[in-house]
Structure formats: structure tokens, C-alpha cells
Figure 1 (cartoon, one colour):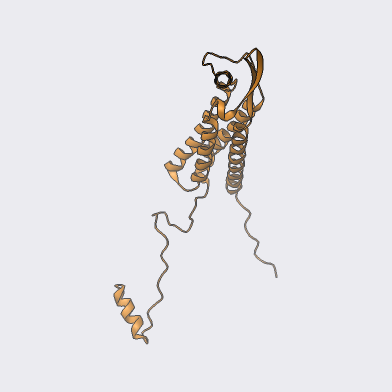
Figure 2 (spheres, rainbow, N blue to C red; figure 1 turned 45 degrees about the vertical axis):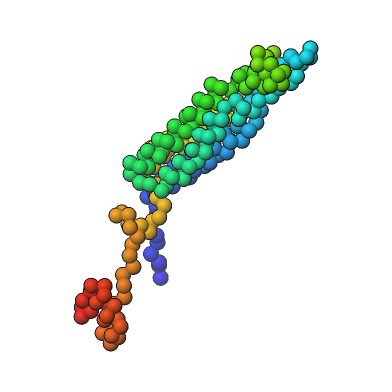
Length: 206
């Protein structure tokens, strides 16, 4: 006997699942790269102290804390995009994209680290007028910006395809309330069931 074969998934369902997976992967990976990169050395330099030179380093947090903060915002938006529907989802997706864009710009614009190195030179020399003599940038600001670009891509995917994505709490109806379980029918041979039906405002004789 031939069984009834299940209908193949529609192209729209397949595309929706792929876009969800891509957005989750890009957003999570991008946030991890940004958070990792923000803790690495972004700039190295030397300062003249007491007739000699002292090596200085500045990590991403010393240079700017904005990329790491925006990565955390992006992670929160990535989760929240599945908790809302309609226009709310579009707004959260826009926040996700803007978080990635802002983190990328912050990493690129503040990546040279000279100001952070100057502050370290002033503290090391105990002289507010001290400055870093030489400075060199590492590759970590660019890696951080690349991670932020992945967050931006996740936000753009959410903006483009998010309307077809599923939402959390599928057991809730469109009206926002949980689907109420239908109470069992009253048994006419059980007086307690009849009284419970009357308490609920039902007609036990139906």
C-alpha cells in the first residue's frame, strides 16, 4: 500500500529558513568577533621617559568602548527580532543594522589609538604634556570592523526577510492571549459537572 507522501516545502519556506539561519550565524559570529577584537591590542607605541623610552600598548577598550557596547546591543536586538512582529520587528531589525554600522565606523575612525597612547604616556611620565613618540596600529581594529559588518549584514537580512520569519511563543494567538483550552463537556450524570458549567456561564443542557 502506498502511503501519502508529505508535500515538499515551498520555496518561500525554504528561503525563510535560510535567511533566519544566515542572520543568526552572521549576527552571533559578528558580535563575538567585535567583543574579542575589542579586548585585543589596537595600537603600540613608545614614550620618552627619564631619558629613555618606554613601550606602550592600547587595547580596543582603551581606544573606544563603543564597538563592544554596540555589539551587546546587536546581540539583544538579534534575539528580540524573533519576539516581535510587524512594525516592531522592522524597528528592531533597523536597530540591529545600525548597531553593526555604528560599531564598524567607531572601530575604523578611532582605530589608530594615538589618543589612548598619549594618555598612557602622560600617566607613565607623570606629565600631562607628555605624548607618545611613535605609534603603530595593529590589525585588530579592522578585524573588529569586519565583525561589525557581519552584524550589519544580519540586520539587513532581518529588514529584507524578517516579515516571513517565525516569532517566539507560537502558542499565542494573533490577539496576544494564550489559546484557552476548551473545558470538557458537562456530564449530565454528574451534578458537580453541571454546577461547574453553570459557574462558567454555560448551558449544561446543550
